[in-house]
Length: 297
Image (cartoon, rainbow, N blue to C red; front, top):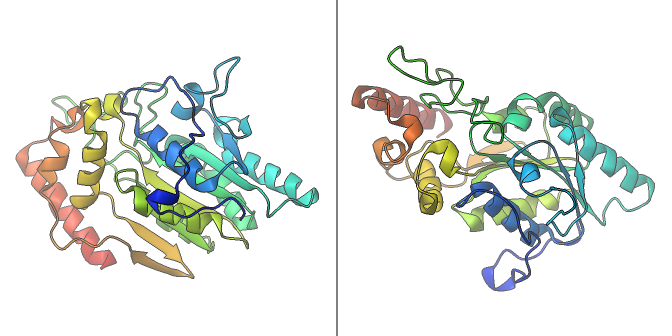
């Protein structure tokens, strides 16, 4: 794809493609958007559904994104991106512009997963980015399919009866890879070089769709001080909670292996959404993480 640039820091453009927003202080989603557009460049078209990014940027009469942006329905991100790609193909501009579907975890793992699966199955020429803050943050911190086990949300409130999230986080990368697409990866805003390198590879795919799942911590939703966003993202990876992987040429590999995982409590205890967990429950979760690593290693 044209417009893809080097991921070396000295080669990144100084100009910003996001010139203002009403997002929360420390919002991980906007770090993801800024980094993504520095890599993808101005020859990009975005399709964005209801989500934090849409609600805090596309407010009448302004859109502070310097690339064409189409607001779409919650379940329709991938379908809308596919339609844009089809139009560009008809105009003979298939390789000139990168078509990006940008949605949160709720709009990807739940409400939008049917449209995403359809686009992947058809082999449509789109790049889909899921920024994952692990709940429906825009509408009040309701649990999503990407909410991790043990987390408290407004629809899994916890309390003495232990009604916090009981299901494991959906493995979006494996779901996407099962469609046999050319490229997919997980990443985290706290490791920008890794994120941008994977984005550049995804944007260069010319024979089908690509997918990036980026972890984007959320201060109000997770319950931590806004200046801790990058630190919490790093701890999610270094404690083994969020695994950085890559699906390429039909093979899955871990792109950041851990010689020794940091204690899970270091990641969980700074977050209000996990403060109800006992030491025994944290230990049990740590054992689940160890088993998951054994499976993928």
